[in-house]
Image (cartoon, rainbow, N blue to C red; front, side):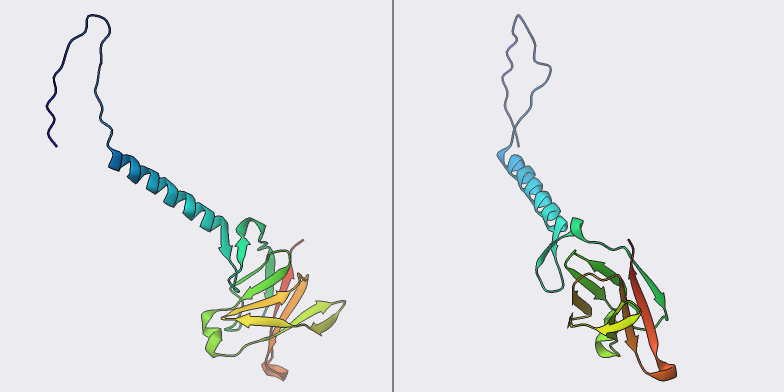
Length: 148
């Protein structure tokens, strides 16, 4: 860009600098701010395994794992206050899938759950969950406990 300026001196006051405003620069800045706001909104509200929006600030990741260390040992366990999600490793998709039990009062109770990809979705939030695969001496168990 080339500018031709005519400078005129004034008796009182002075102008220490001159600036230029470009409409395209203003539009780029506004677009960048809008993209940043959209990303922040996306990060604060993402989707669960079913594709339903979830507020990340409401998720509880306070779970402890104990027991065996099978190839299907959960990578992540969390709940949203309504459902519990158990994320298994990707290789579980083509391998052995454990059975899920709820432990209550010393008893193992079978409950309904759904599996989507490698995530087990359980309706409800429970204190103790057991994942079991195999039988007899080949049985492997991982116990999941919710921290209070």
